Image (tube, rainbow, N blue to C red; front, side, top):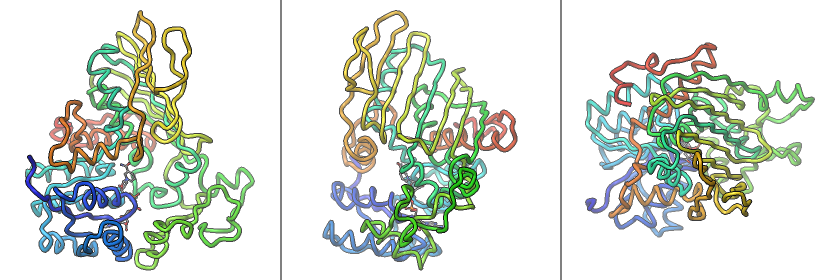
Length: 438
Ligand SMILES: NC(=O)c1ccc[n+]([C@@H]2O[C@H](COP(=O)([O-])OP(=O)(O)OC[C@H]3O[C@@H](n4cnc5c(N)ncnc54)[C@H](O)[C@@H]3O)[C@@H](O)[C@H]2O)c1
């Protein structure tokens, strides 16, 4: 049994923080308590405080500007700090919170480069504190079932993984409207987004990557790509821009209460523009990516990510020495499933998973239909984090800094490979004493 009322402080009160704030203030309020918010924007913190009062009938919690993070810890005395800031700042709060005696839950990616990853590992060794990385995708019924199938030997020893993920012009474009478009903020999509995907592969096949080669380019977003297609734009951002009325990439912050409160009203105090034109000229994050990797277990991976596809979804195939699992869905984390075969009969697709034994008939594997919240993954992850009697972790879904490190190092190595044109060995990126623990 967990002790009563764990005290949580949240640093980074943007959109994602809402998932944790609502869980602590709502379903899990018997066991959890919010004690402070911290951000560079007073307006965003105030917006969440208003929501606490209006939605949950709770008192506002004390707010602290980022520069006063330490004072927040001393005064509010959280047990655990939840880090939901922009990616390139995660390490600052993870490390300082642990030094000041707190455990930490960090959003993915754990951090954005190898130096910061090594510093986090060192801080954990030094302080003995605990870091959990919020890999919600692991908790989706789809991902859990794949882990279970492989663990139970459905395809034998995994030898090859083909993993293709496409983001559409709504979801994919969103990484180019805001801070993610500058690679220094997010590590690029191979760190920011692919950390989910690399973590799934690592977890499914129970191994970590060692050799990585990658190519990546900005081919679709950005001013020069638009101009090469004969498109010119007169506006820097979308909201309030008359000429953007028919622009299919436009996001209008004044049309949704949450966007107005969290971003439009907060522009003055943080300078954060949430709706920049995706065809602006300062984009350094690649939108077209291919990675090849070898794992310590010997398995090979081919991975691709495209951020401007007409449709969203994924196709994954994991081939082992006793069979193959194929996974396919359209939409965000499994809204619509692609065709699945039972034996020779084509059946209406009710499941995204098909298993083909090496010498047997293919069969479909049913999973519970995904609920809301990233294909059902958010509610299940929150239950595991906040419940007083969480479900057993039979599939090892709880992710640590080892998992956070292993998945970002694949992205970091891939970024290095893009820069140098060479194959990158992960053991060359950070000291052996750190990689040995991953
Ligand atoms: N697991 C998931 O599925 C999932 C989904 C969305 C976002 N995320 C992660 O959550 C994090 C936040 O993403 P978001 O979509 O909420 O972004 P966001 O832009 O809405 O929020 C980021 C917040 O960080 C704050 N911030 C920026 N610099 C800061 C600093 N130096 N100190 C303190 N606060 C600072 C901003 O003011 C803002 O409030 C990211 O790491 C992202 O990868 C995870």
